[in-house]
Length: 148
Image (cartoon, rainbow, N blue to C red; front, side, top):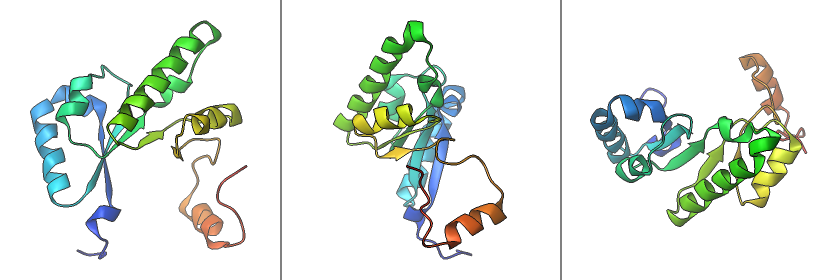
């Protein structure tokens, strides 16, 4: 290995849409990656035509819930919240961590924390940045990386 990283430190993301385009190939690739010691995430879960069978058949380690679920209008907000809660509860019963993508507001962040979500991504924390900006941000040990 060129960089001498332990395999479990490398996270491989497989998009939900890849499964719908070639289920058997993706299932085989995911199992091979896990057999080699890599952590495999199901990215964009819920963005396409999610099937609960997909979660059963694909032996992934982590679900990344698509940001689409957080983009709610007033007329469907309650329904969207129930879907998010259901997916999170299902993942908890499977002992599968969930990462929620696309968090843009403090209210969304607080809502997800209230549901027990520990891993949250989105512009609420930081917008995309250059490598030099990231290095500067992470080099200051006194500066918190998260916002309040």
